[in-house]
Every structure is written in structure tokens, then in C-alpha cells.
Amino acid sequence: MTSLTAPVAATHPAIGARGRPRSEVARDRLPSAREALAACQLCSHRCGTDRRSGPAGLCHAGPEARFFSAQTEVADELELLPTFAVALSGCNFRCDFCITGESSWNPRAGLALDTRTMAAQAAKALERGARTVMILGGEPTIHLPALLELIAHLPNHATLVLKTNAALTAEARELLAGLPDVWLPDFKFGNDACARRLAGVPEYMDTLTSNIQWMGTPTAGGSLLVRHLVMPSHLECCTAPVIRWLATHLPTGQRRISLRQGYWPAWQARRHPELSRHLLAAEFEQAVGWAHESGLEVVP
Image (cartoon, rainbow, N blue to C red; front, side):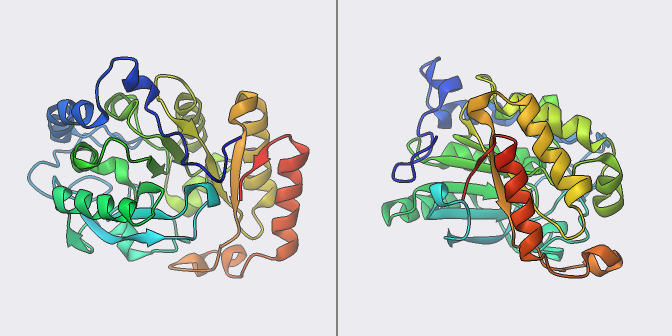
């Protein structure tokens, strides 16, 4: 169990074994990440479009990244707080209930990302008491060149958290292996039908489960903490299968879940009658009970 009084996973196992700083490894991988945009295969959509000259593909992202938020936050998992959180614009999912709505969907939202300036802001936040640096979105892995460039400029001692929807491909995994200290995948759905209907994502379960298992390996490096947003009327179809899968397929020391209860009918959630209300306290308590009964560590 991770202590709440010490930084999370402040080592880089996959890099330390080679004796190379994280910044150096990220910098070396940049050319490959930029080349990958020529026929993009970075996420499970595998659209194969050329993103080098402008917006393309299902995520509508081009070669340059933007961000819609960069600030120290205190509303995430306790062991990660305070965290300096950088939210990159644009996403490869289309979740109708997305709490950040257009800022997450639109890769043109916010401001252009200057990676050196952002890394300097993160370093100042760490000096002022932030314990971690979290990169999220939207979805950060669709912006791999900018993501690696930002990591290359971050202090090597920074505890890096990568929050992702975990729809990345083997090609993207290879470019990210060993860089985050904490993998924070968002396991949203417990079946393919809900994923397709609510987020426009095909073959969700195979992709998510494969990537989450990989994130727990020495190759991926760092530690694993799985998030799950408990949604109204989706306990049986989504929450219960997610809990069962984690309890069945992850090693004992990695069965850690962060159950989130902050659902509210944001963005376009009202397209779906069952999502047009707030989560009930009893529903969240049921989810927590199932997690404990399954032997998962429920992380506050």
C-alpha cells in the first residue's frame, strides 16, 4: 500500500535499470513519436491519417498540442495531492457525459502548449509543495510528441502521473514505457455496448484490459492505480464487471481502485435518460461495498 505521507513511486524502474534519466529517454523517443503522426496508429481507432500538417483523424488533432487547464489541484486521489495538473485539449473518445465537455473534445481549445514554459511552471509548483505532476486531458496520449517533449523538460525528480483513457496501442506503449511513475487509467465501462453507445468507442474491453495489464508490468514501469467513475444506473453493467475484472486479472499488490463519485449530468449526458440525474449515495455505497468484498484496495 502506498503511504499517504510520502510521494508516490518516486523511481523509474524501467529507466533506472539502464541508468538513464527520464528526460533523456523521452528526448530520444521524440523523433519516433513525430514520425508516427504521418500515419497515426497511436490509439485504438488506428485511423492511419496524416496529422503532420493539421487536424485529422477521429480526434481531430494536428501536430501541435494545446492545453485548457494548468494549475495545482487538490481534488484527486489523496496520495497524489497536491498535484500540478496539465490538461491537454482534444480526445479520441466522445463521452456524452464528459465533465469538461468541449475543452476535452476540441483539440483547438485553450492555449498553445509551450513545453519549456509548462515544465518550468510545474517545477515551481513542486517547489511550492506540489507532490506530483499529472498530465491528463482530454486524452494526453494522442499528443505523444508534445507529451514526450514536456516530459523531457520536467525535472527528473518529479513524480509523474499519467491519467489516460487507456485506449493506446502497442506503438504508443513502446514510446511511453518506463516514463510515468504512476499509471492512472480510467476504466470507464464494463462492456463494449456501453462504450460504443456512450463514447463511440469500439472493442473497448479488449483494448482496456490489455493495456491495464501491461501497465502493471516492469516494462511499463511505475505503479498502477485504476480509476472508475460510478455512473447512475450503470452499476450492474459497468461498475460490477470492472470490479470483477480487476479482482480476477491483476496481481494482489496491484488491485487498487479509485472509485469516483463526482458524476453529474454534464455536457450531452441528457441524450441518455439513465444519465440525466445525479448519482445516489446508495449507489456509490453499493459500489464501494462490492470493491471491498472483491478484495480490492479502495483508494480515497
